[in-house]
Length: 178
Image (cartoon, rainbow, N blue to C red; front, side, top):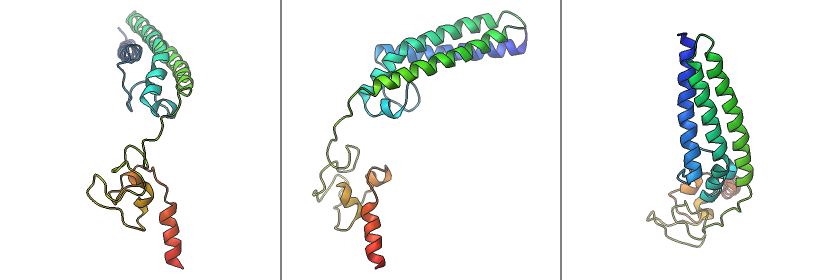
């Protein structure tokens, strides 16, 4: 058996298992929002509901891609030119996955954005309002502290996550330079 045929068969079969698991997870709702698997875009990652809906819509296409890969992988074991089936199946499956992922992103975009939880974001140290003087980090925001804009203390979780603007800090730098 030709080595290229074997390689293409193994690649096709491994990808078939991957897309089948992503597709089944999306159909059953067990695919939770993550950074590695499923349809990941700004539209799907903004809420768990958008992620679940986008992946549920794309899941039948993922399963179809897995089926194409399975058939191509099995046919790739067929001889010297079998690699054409394996690599052809990989190409066709990537087209299918791209199309259904695009559809999933468009459907996820229809899900309304979640409301703010208060403060800068729910992921901040305090998660509270701007006038909150103490937070869960055990420190208090000082007047003039850039983190005060965010409703957090000097722990800086919002600033590190890029959630707060640096306008306050830039204004202070300009005032100090005068």
